[in-house]
Image (tube, rainbow, N blue to C red):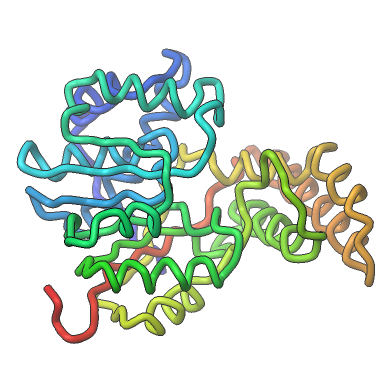
Length: 304
């Protein structure tokens, strides 16, 4: 069962939200994203003074929260391979530049690179902890994730903190999110390989068990793990369901020319996502995010 984090004092909003580029009308939505990451940091027990590698940092929400937890003696290096113009209403470049100029900016470095390239350029250990906060599903394949886990172990990073959606619905309100993620992952797995300028958010949708198995094969062991209920106002699930039920997704499926009944299956999944959203809305409810699996891993052999 997912645990529900205890309420937090609202003072963190005054510290974090001004550091993040957003429209005033979006403040409630942005606040929920930060609250979720604060809950994850509490579960991970990030110690003050940590030097952290934030892999797949995006526009910097996790990096900001991590920087607030590590304190002035710590530092967060956020890396992402997305192009500077990615994202909206503000781009990756705009969001990261705003953070860099904020009161927490001195604790954060943003780099446009991937983990293997960064670690190869610095053979000495630079980081005590690596974070993958809702970035695992963005990786193109399980093999890519496996290679990353191996590279982090080779770099003698001693702690690995993970967070990703469970992939299953615990409540009817979560079913649209779960099915939408499965549909995106199936499309990625079934289509022809070719270069794409942009891609879907969900690409590999590995389960918690699959993720931990890949990590274990590289020498990582689970120190602690759990499941958190996402804040009610977190809109990731609603947005993902909206993508899959859209005309854009339908056209993308048809353009691939998929065989073996895959096209029909995907279009059926998309229609079902739309139906699930309508069922929830008719009941005056809201599409909710799936629960979130989190884990703290350490290297076997006590390399602490």
